Amino acid sequence: MVIDPNARRTDGESVRIAKDVLCAGAQTKICLPDGPEEVERALARRGARRPVLVGDDRALLRMVELLHRRRELADATLSVVPVGGSATVALAHSLGVPTDAVAAARTVLDGTARPRDLLVDESGGVVLGGLRIPSGLAPHGAHDRVPGDGQGAAAGPDGAAGADGHAPGPYGEGARGRDCGCDPCVHDRLRAEDGWDGRDGTGPPGHDREGPDREGDGREGDGHRPWWSPAARTARTALTLLSLPVIGLAGGARRPAHPPPQRLRIEADGVLLTDLDRPVERVSVSTAAPGGGLAEIVVHPHAAGGPLRARARAVTVSGPDFRYHADALIRGPVRSRTWTVLAEAWSLMLPHRP
Image 1 (cartoon, rainbow, N blue to C red):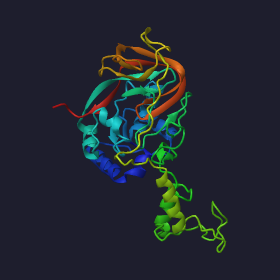
Image 2: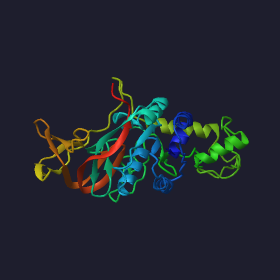
Image 3: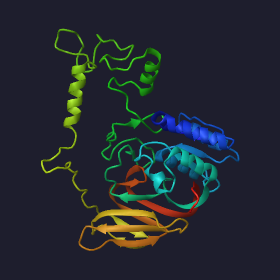
């Protein structure tokens, strides 16, 4: 059982429940990795054991991609206990995995392995559910931009940190450090060791209240206040609120501008669906049906008319730099990408059908 570090940080209670249920129902070896290298070592040494992941969609994607790269995906039936917010486990839920820790753990023990198709691209990236172009805005807590070389960094579509203020931890998405910029685990340790909770407006132990701060030199009597003082915190909160979407008089938040049409050349099994001279509003690609071995492509043209639909084993999209939202990640920018369907390339433990 591989327990993703982000799951341990975000919902330790669900992790404990899953561990107790699995350990009570089967012989289990627990792995607590601090990084992808340790996950790879654990999978390489698993022998005949079935890999079980406790984590969110990002952790699931990393494990599938890793096993695919090692050419071991077809022989490793995966089990998942989703841990995280509803947006961060939406992919697992869409695949049919229960999001309740007890139900998911019981599915690991008593479920049925069902084969699923996989979309893979020429860079080694995998898509379990589907992808869309343009990328648009990632779900809350699921911002990730992966450059064309396959190396990822947590960010929103504009390259900044996600809308939830999170940035990557040592392995995957973690909480951004508190106002003082320290690593969150430092504060957790300080709370445990020194009993500091920050409610009195002071800085954590070891932070000199009279020392220099970020905006001034922190000296008393010169008009500057330490950045952790209540007044400074209030000012920072006000600035944050001013950056939020404005609520109009008619109600509802001001929506972001609709993404402009894109000029893309799209081919399905070598057959041209649309070319650069016909801008498109959006494109979606997904596996048509589990085990079917085909991708379903839907192209919404910018001009009047209904969407173009096709099914194919491979789809190629090319054009000016574009990003795409694949499962829980935003990847790109790229100028060309080809996705190929691998029929029944992997198996996932799911509840018994009624």
